Image (tube, rainbow, N blue to C red; front, side):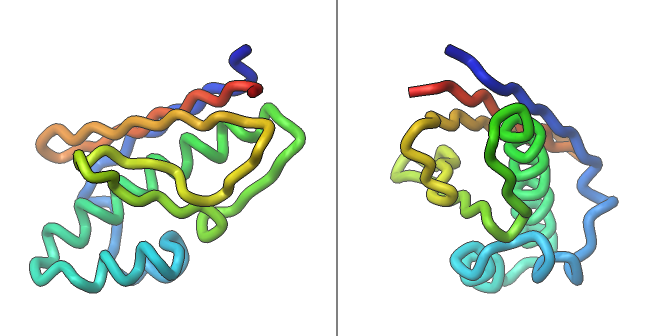
Length: 113
């Protein structure tokens, strides 16, 4: 059964590189720092921000609470983003991310297991 839905959209130009330490987990910061182009860093940061905002909105409908840095999202072998943390045994967290020119949008659906 679906227990929460969240969505967030962001204009990439609104995100600033200095916000990375407030938004990204330690594991995500390593990926962020590995990008040589600032434009790629900002695209990555904006995508993680929208996904995390969507997760926070969706999880807010449950008994759990998380902050931005409590959430770790890593791409799988096919390039699709996956939630690594938090790993809540009673919940299945589905996420998706899309970029279009100057915008990115993140969506989250949470199910009871």
